[in-house]
Image (tube, rainbow, N blue to C red; front, side, top):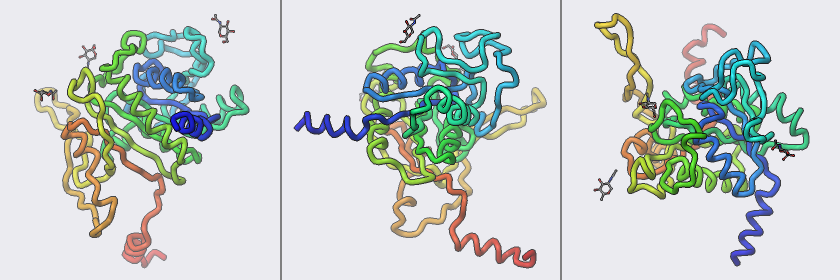
Length: 320
Ligand SMILES: *[C@@H]1O[C@H](CO)[C@@H](O)[C@H](O)[C@H]1NC(C)=O
Ligand SMILES: *[C@@H]1O[C@H](CO)[C@@H](O)[C@H](O)[C@H]1NC(C)=O
Ligand SMILES: *[C@@H]1O[C@H](CO)[C@@H](O)[C@H](O)[C@H]1NC(C)=O
């Protein structure tokens, strides 16, 4: 029985290729851990990520202006003067690439240049963003996140995508050379294992067109020793509590400080029995820190339901 199940898994996911990216940069602990573990689990992975930290860049599309780096990459793993895009020469791994761009342009680099020129016989089956260092929750952060942008940029190109984010423990990123290990309590290792469980399910079943998943892990392992096997919880991105960036005027410095706010003035229009409206918001679940991983389905279909569409057009009917 076990052998049969194993055989089935192998045949179902055999020959599938994952494109792995992020916004924290290609030297981040979490992405390197996931790369290592996906390979160990037998998957084909092509990793390509920004050469430096590009968190919060959302969908901004920056391409190199020179074919050499003008400053060192993140953690000086590659130095100023190195090519603006290349594989990991120190690791001698031609499946690990950096690009001097933002998550959206990295994805374009992958599909328009890297795959056709270096992997011409490869088809990408799934794009994975992350694991991000810090959560990407609620519309405010969903829209600001570079990791999420890499995912929606891929979905627009016709590839299913999953965005993974970890607990807010290292907003300033950690270098994989310093922090990668095999300690079961290292959050990066816990997140990687969970991510692979979901990735394998999605490789098997696929996702509907224009659809992706947004996943946020709780504090686990060394961050919360009571949480080593978080349970999955179905959530939704949009909810009454919108968590977002905000600013506050600082009278001492005569300038502005960044702060975070929860806006509660958006009433979502829920019909009784609507299975999506019945779900908790991912922000509310994450905020409780009950050792739960939120998993929200999102779509990049920017069209609108016909009732709302007709209502708006009729209010400006004189124009037509
Ligand atoms: C790099 O990897 C290639 C292919 O696996 C191998 O042939 C080569 O010897 C390696 N080079 C170094 C310097 O380790
Ligand atoms: C960045 O990391 C360093 C070293 O781990 C830590 O001391 C510092 O507090 C961190 N800064 C922020 C803003 O998280
Ligand atoms: C872990 O559980 C113990 C026992 O229930 C509790 O005392 C402790 O505060 C918990 N730690 C965290 C980080 O939640």
